[in-house]
Amino acid sequence: MLRFKFRKIAGCLSLASLLFLSVGCETTASSPQLKKLDHAVHIHRGIPAATLTQLLGEPAFKKTLEATYGETELWVYRRTLTTRTALEITRIQENTYWDPFRAKMITVETPFSEPKIITNTEVTEILVVDGVVHDWTRYGEADTQLAGITR
Image 1 (spheres, rainbow, N blue to C red):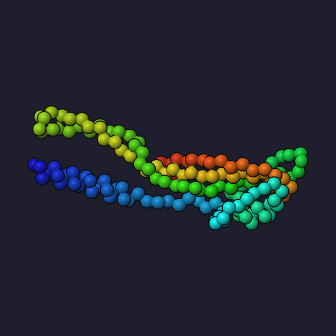
Image 2 (image 1 turned 180 degrees about the vertical axis):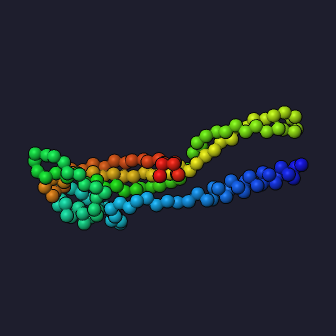
Image 3 (image 1 turned 90 degrees about the vertical axis):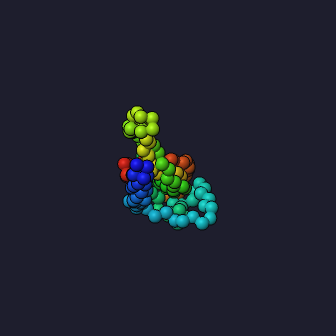
């Protein structure tokens, strides 16, 4: 009887480990290629937009803004700082079984978890007026996705 239970538990554990190892990776759609920065880049007012493109590469996107003082664009650069994966409990299921030692039914709560992907991104927004850098701001974003659900 004990050997049968051990085999059943071993089978469940090997099935669970097989499912855990079969979770695959997925690549996302490509965005404009940013230059790999191997040194600090200093941005200042008055730098030409062409020089900025040479330093940082093409922005993730450009948006033309309406302004009375010249041709104005907002350039947005995104850079992934860190990506990590963690397991998050998504649901709890109650399992009931017969306990022969206590001679009664026992209910146990079993947590189920899924991998969660956490990406920290730095966003730099640069205001370009008449082809010259006028102003900029930087901020961080944290994006959390449950693997397989939101991708």
